[in-house]
Every structure is written in C-alpha cells, then in structure tokens.
Image (cartoon, rainbow, N blue to C red; front, side, top):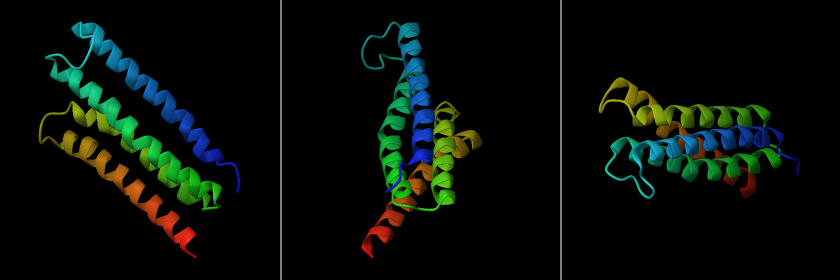
Length: 133
C-alpha cells in the first residue's frame, strides 16, 4: 500500500473549499442576524444546504478514492475522479442560487449532483472489482 499523495493534495483543496463555504454561511448569519438555523431567509438556507451537502458527500468520496489510490489504482483514474468531484462541488453552490429550472440550475446544480454520484459509483465499483478477486 502506498501513501495516496494525489488524494491528500485534493483533500487539502477540499478542506480549503469547505472553510470558504463555512465562512459564506457565517457571513450570511451575520448579515441576517441569525444565530441558529436559517431564520426566514431563503438565501441563508441555500448557503447552509450548499455547505452541508459538501460535507455530506466529499468525505465519503475522498475515502473511496483514497482507498483506490493506496491500493494501486491508475493515476489517471484517481486524478480523473478527484478533478470531476472538485468541479462538481464548486459548481453545485452556483446552481443552488440559480433561477428555478434555468440552464444554470440544470448545469451547475444538476450537473454537480450527477457528477458527484458518478464519482461515488465509479469509485465504489472500482473498489469492489479490485477487492473481489
């Protein structure tokens, strides 16, 4: 087993992104004078959900890809999965604020969701195939 250098690098990028999303939530709380929950502000609710969604999906995806990398998966597969995940997680918050049923919502939010699910499925299947034999 080798140290998953690529996954570690991306984990650092994801951590900084998460801190940025968290700061965005804090700024929204300060601007709306909301200490807990989202209050009555739909924009704050969207910020909170974008940050929480990131926190719900990214750790599992990093774990799966890290296992792949540590187990000797190709650098192209590992890098490809991580780049797709990073782009997906950056696009998603933009889609959260796009007009309902707009092309931006479809591409950013929908594309971010589909790409994230794709990374999870590909990484999970690759792990199952690698460990089944």
